[in-house]
Length: 243
Image (tube, rainbow, N blue to C red; front, side):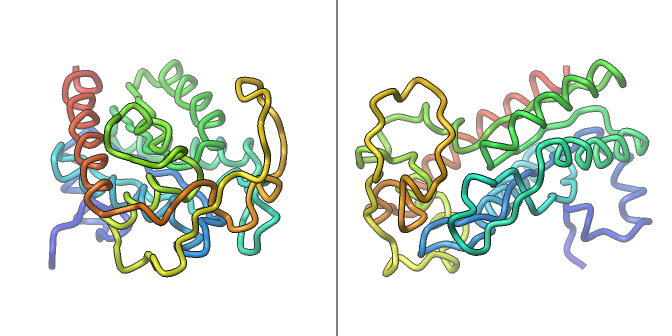
């Protein structure tokens, strides 16, 4: 049987042996929500799990089960979206992390691919560090890759399900992307105050589930972003979490 780093795919005896080899756990977090007409509702989860797999191979970590829902209430204008209250997200992940703390894990890397999960997860990891003496790190993947310049060409490459997100999926899971349906879908709402938080629903910004130009996405762009991101995360795990 092929060796896996996903705990959900292990027998109890395999997990019992593998947990003796590492104290590092990667915890994916995502959502079920609209991701344009060209990608699955579970794109955030699919990306989180694949990135976790690639990272775990490089740092000898195990991968915890992903809670396959997120805080997606503002996307309810599109069918298929599932919503979980922030306080529930926090408490379910608390149970997950505390379970693995009891099984000996001491270094937790939260790989979050859904922006609205960040708040409850940040709060939780602070509490777990204080309460158990573990060490933790967290990224919001889609916000994390904003810093990688010179890769994307559209005006708003990091819009929801746009050039960046579609490129990453084309690299990680091309079989799940239908580029014939990929839209160029600029925001319907002209934001005069972009630096002030607002609480509009997503269907006020987009009627496709995409915000930006997904038509210019390529697997090559996704490869550059994924490789750069993974390299930095591996460095962080080895030189921060494990120190």
